[in-house]
Length: 96
Image (tube, rainbow, N blue to C red; front, side):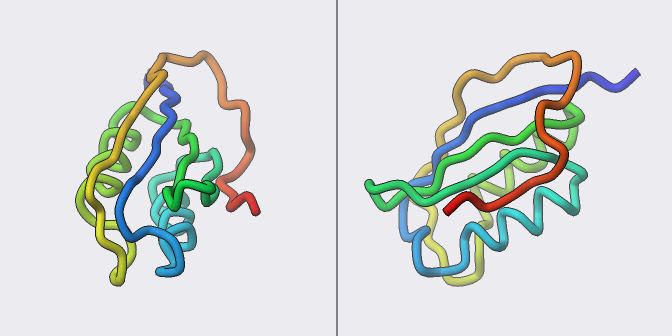
């Protein structure tokens, strides 16, 4: 049985105005992850992803190193990582 995880993230750098949320949504969906992301008033992007453990690890790596083509990632922080018994979201969405 696949272990499900949830993790909160925040990405720092040039991540607003460069389609970062759109690319994050596309990547999450391609990995069958659910959750959300949004811009913050501190010019970061934060959110949460939930899904299979190995897909969460792939998403964390993407958030650390890839992002959108025009973004610049200075750092990505991950908090509150935990095993979960079921998903609390049905899809990944951009919050505005």
